[in-house]
Length: 458
Ligand code: HEM
Ligand SMILES: *[C@@H]1O[C@H](CO)[C@@H](O)[C@H](O)[C@H]1NC(C)=O
Ligand SMILES: *[C@@H]1O[C@H](CO)[C@@H](O)[C@H](O)[C@H]1NC(C)=O
Ligand SMILES: *[C@@H]1O[C@H](CO)[C@@H](O)[C@H](O)[C@H]1NC(C)=O
Ligand SMILES: *[C@@H]1O[C@H](CO)[C@@H](O)[C@H](O)[C@H]1NC(C)=O
Image 1 (cartoon, rainbow, N blue to C red):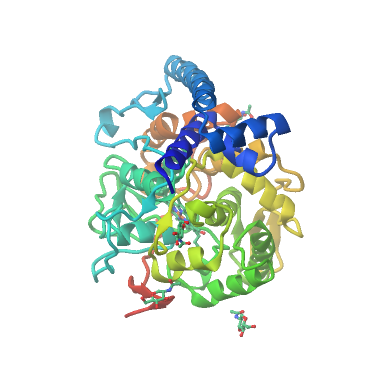
Image 2: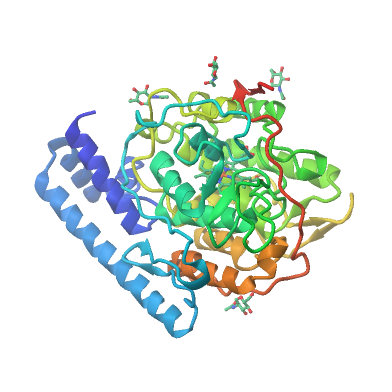
């Protein structure tokens, strides 16, 4: 790839971080989604490297970015007036502001450069995890740890994981901050920002009370994971080769693509399986957000960035079976934001052959629906499902440490998460601890952390 093409991709990448639109310009042109005149202009610019058109695009992008920053500032001022930033935070000029007071040691993630880049770079070689390193149920966090993009021992922080998520997978600042915030609340130590990517671990401080690990069931770790079994049946962190192979078999029906169609089929299969067999099957609001997001993430994060729509076995399997990046692999060229995620989730739900009703088993053959209608979900509604995962129901399944310090949770959510959902009009009012709050069951790590070709080596 020539330097001009790389420069061009970077330009598009900048566009996508600032547009917050479901489709960046170039991708839209390539998919035939732009009006012919605009698409012609785009392709002509690319072919001729037409400086004037590029410059014009840059001006448009800057205008969009300025508008975005202006609305961030408005939201920031409203939050200040409402007393919602009592411990700092907030989003200004595209970056989170520092926290203060009891959260002053909580480092915040920073926006990272965007654009096509080979991953790993030479500073981040693969090293198999050692016996005291922790691994968990997120294949990409495990991969980042195996390459030292986050701490190799599996004890990371809010900022470190969110930055690594941008650097390694090319996901947007908004998406990465959201995911890492969810991880921190699921089982970390809020004042220091530290969390284990698996279960509880003595290397994570217990400033407010026991830190239970992100695999603590019911908050981020949910039923119906792709390659992990439901917590009811055993260790929810361990990779299960049979589950992965079942998925691979489904992808065989769809040209070997780990794409929307394969997951539309697979998620219904898993839903029914759990509904019929897991007496504690919990398909609540966090299940809805997490199980749909993790599936669309596979085809948006794992393809080679030079061939972004090709989610084939060669690109997906190394992350799962060896927890490493594919050989000569490039991350995405454009940032993948919360709006993109919402659009993909809406599409996945619409594509599933059967409506998977959110609710909960209270014993087998006793499924209690929640009353959320998934029959037709808009992209914005789906983006707001992600917000619901932390705002609506946060109090349920929070560790006792956080329930007892709910003012800190509230200050953190207002300062680090709410601003990213403001553009979509999601309800980001933090609700109070509910009936399931204060669950103290710790998460678990994988029984063995060294995975080679889908088989643990201990
Ligand atoms: C940066 C912070 C992140 C945290 C704290 C995190 C945490 C988690 C957790 C707790 C789960 C378990 C969910 C479940 O029970 O089903 C999970 C699963 C998963 N995550 Fe992440 N994640 C992060 C980033 C990402 C990113 C950027 C991707 C992009 C590909 C990703 C891809 C996945 C996938 C595909 C699964 C499903 C694994 C399976 O069951 O096969 N994660 N993650
Ligand atoms: C996948 O398909 C192969 C070939 O048909 C079959 O032998 C295998 O049992 C299937 N695996 C799973 C886990 O379904
Ligand atoms: C995983 O690593 C093993 C051992 O290096 C290798 O033989 C295998 O092909 C790798 N699998 C994938 C899917 O990359
Ligand atoms: C990714 O794309 C590059 C450039 O086309 C290619 O050289 C490389 O082999 C691809 N890697 C994978 C894992 O597909
Ligand atoms: C937003 O959520 C809060 C807390 O759950 C609720 O009290 C409030 O009525 C909701 N606001 C809107 C506009 O739906």
